[in-house]
Image (tube, rainbow over all chains, first blue to last red; front, top):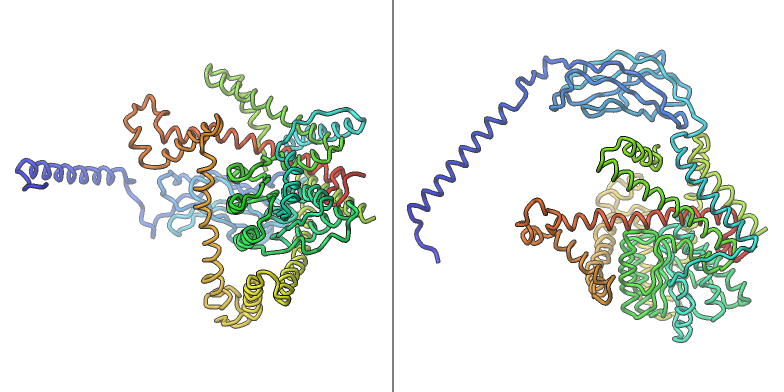
Length: 415
Length: 225
């Protein structure tokens, strides 16, 4: 229901318009005043060059980089006054400088990774103002050198050494016959039950080792689990179907299954076609596997390896055909999908622990115990860090602030 | 011998790759090993392609079950292979880039392969809905917490969340739904993710050591020494 606008309404609208126009004008004037008093004419103005240009060897590398540093130009005022800095390089005796990089204003260094070890190089840096270059003095000649040890990673080395030492210690400890307690992992306990179900139903088992190649540790973890699964499969004489998306995974999986059948004393039952290559393409592979699932209706599906966007498509298709599904991945983003759609999910570390857990071999179980030392270390440091940061923040304690900073530095990888 | 050689290769390659992180002179060796892997993977691709043709060729020849799918697979494989190898309809001829605009290979890729891939990807939207429906049913305490958290996050990412709690004063801004959603994502969720990541890192170290030291041999088809 709309009537004719009253005089009051029209007056209000007009007032709003006038206020808006006034504000626009005011803002415009304000902005105009905020602009630099005078932007020089690019044709005549020459910005001042950067000073104190020096080249230093890039630390802890193979002698393939030099770091060029300089002090900012006095015209680098932070209001986009200059366009940036261009870095030029020449050999020790050469005067022909070539550009090796351009960086934004307020930047005081550039790493030149196009140098050769042992050769001497000199640098100059130019302030760029709309194409006009103001060159600095030429730096002293410096040659990149190789460092035998990357001391930046000393913290990582020590932490790795502690964890690796703990793993090796517990492997040796277990070798001596000491009993170790390992918590139960439901997903692994269910493997036999899932294979048994396939046997009862007379349907195949589907095993997907992820979509990454053999250079991914998740795929290796999947293949080690395949060895365990294939052994039971060979014992029960069930059909295993393994479509893969990488040729190397195909050859490795074939060897693993073949050995499992040999171990079970049934080499004649092994068939190369149990493992077949589909395609490297992610969604082409998913389409083919979904087709296999819908047509063959496997009783049990294993998804153990590296998965990405295809995780939920596979798991939901498996769910729709009523298969028991056991998944495991170390891709944190895919874990919720597997948890939602599968019966059992091996979360992160459980995937890597699976083979050791199933082997029940003391040496392998010992390695899991060593892993726990790493967890304990992480827990202690996290609790110490949280307490220290809280105390530093709440009471302004300098000691705890430094302790927090120190802990952060220790657990930060600098490269 | 069949067991010892792979174990020795694993030991050498694993050790060199670890050393290459800490000792710059060994970096090149680490890179070389990665290149060796790529070379092996390229040769293995012939095995993969051969396996695909053999399996589907056999099924087609014997008119086995679902042989129609095998026909489509083989046609797709060979048409793409021929279009790419001989650079059919390539504007620049045989010497030009195989992915040049207007080439048959690129047309097949853009007009058939890409839409098919996008179709598969689009299925995800429906699967997310069905999986969420199952996951968010408040069957127990954990599922109820999950449901509430998911509801807050979903609402917090929509304008409705802003309108619904925008009236709450600034001093209580944390209970505004968008802020609550941010807090859930950046505190409890991130803490959980990091815990999983720490576990994964430790699991990788432990598994790698088992492989390097030859304790884990399942991939060779044997359980123990």
